[in-house]
Image (cartoon, rainbow, N blue to C red; front, side, top):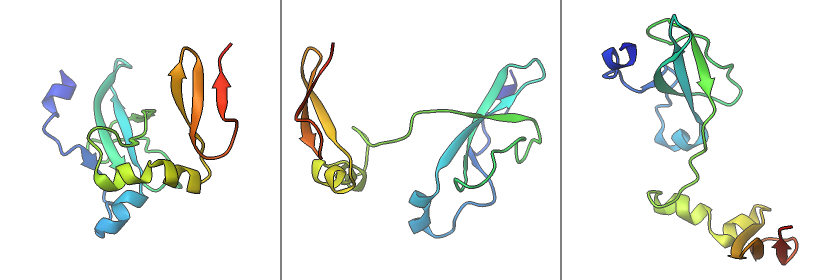
Amino acid sequence: MFSQAFSGLWPVVGSSRPSNPATLHAMPLYQYAIILPDGEEGMVFEVMQKMTDPPLTEHPVLKMPVRRIISAPGLGGEWATSREKSNLSDAKLAEKGFTKYVKTGDGTYEKAAGTGPDQIRGK
């Protein structure tokens, strides 16, 4: 009921939104959920914050208590931009010190980029 009433709010809140578009990729987007009086989660919203900023304790507009939600990072994929996809290329991953393995069989992975064993087999 509560989340439906406020579903029209702008989902990304916070006055620290950078004015320079180049810095948008430098600041992570954190998800928070409002904690309703019965202890259940209410509306979910996002805030752009520096990694060094402390987590929010209340909604910036509604002044209700909130908790940070742990969610999967956006690493690109089908809907990623060309720039995001190029950052995940085998060459870029190896250049940044990552090792990428590709599943080739039942429990078997072969190295596609980086350093490390050529093959990993599960037990």
